[in-house]
Length: 318
Image 1 (spheres, one colour):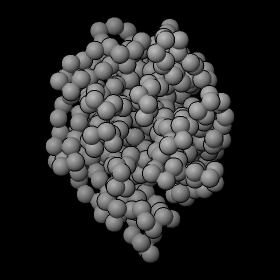
Image 2 (cartoon, helix red, strand yellow; image 1 turned 90 degrees about the horizontal axis):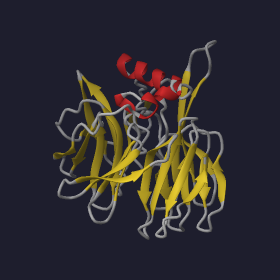
Image 3 (cartoon, one colour; image 1 turned 30 degrees about the vertical axis):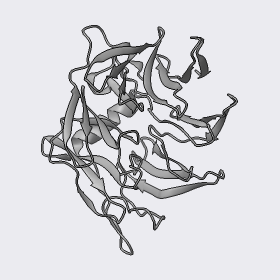
C-alpha cells in the first residue's frame, strides 16, 4: 500500500496526513517491511509469477467508464469508444468525486543511478483539465486520499508494531485511528456508497468496517487448494472489492482466477471465472446494474469486460 503526505491545494478538502495549513508537510518514509514489499511488488510487474495489477475502475454520471492499465488511464464512452483519458500515469487506484473529477496517482523509479522513487496525486477535472493535486514527493509516502467517503474523509493503513492500523482523516484535516482493531496486512480497500461501509482486504480475509469503527469478518482464508494463477503469492491473491445495492460483496480472487460473491447472509459463491491466461483484479456494478470486470493477463495486459444479459460479453483492451 502506498500513501502520500504532502500539501493539498484544495482548501475545501483535508490536507493529507502530516500536513498543517500554512506550515507545510512532514514526509514519512514507509517502514523497511513495507518498503521491501513495495520494491518487490514493482519488480514483479515484470515477473509474471508475482504480477501486481491495478484495481481502479469507476463510472461517472454521464456513463463514461475510466480504468487503469498501469501505463495509462483509459476512458470507455457510453457508445463503447475507448480512448486514453490520462497518459503515462502508473496508478493502481482511481477515485471519482461528486463533481465528476477523476483522481489517481503516479509512481515512478528514477533508476539505479539515483535509486530514487517518486509519487504525486493528480486530478482530471470533469472539463478535461489535468493538474497535480498533490505535488511530487520523493520516496514512499502516506495517504494519497484515493479512498474517500462521500463526506470527503479519507482512509489509509499504517504499520503499528506487528499489525496494521486503519487511519481516518476528516474534512478539517484531523487524523485519528478509525478503529482499535489490529489488522494483519491491509492490501486493498473499498468504500461502498451503497451501504456507507468500508471494506478491507486483510491478507486473505475480507472485513467490513462500519461508520462507527465496528469490524465484522465476512470471509476468511479465501485461498483455494490449488496452484494459484501464475504462482502469485498470498499477499497478491486478493485484489479489488465492490458491492451492489442488494448488500452483496464481490471479491476479485486474482490468485484463483475468479470473482467470489458474499451475500448479506454470509453465503460465498463463485460469480465469475476468467478465461485461461487471464484473471480478475477489480470490478464494479454501474447505476444500471451492469457488471464490469477488470482482468489482468499472464502477459501483463489489462482488459475490461462488460457483462451483458445475452451472455456475449463486450471486451475492451487486452
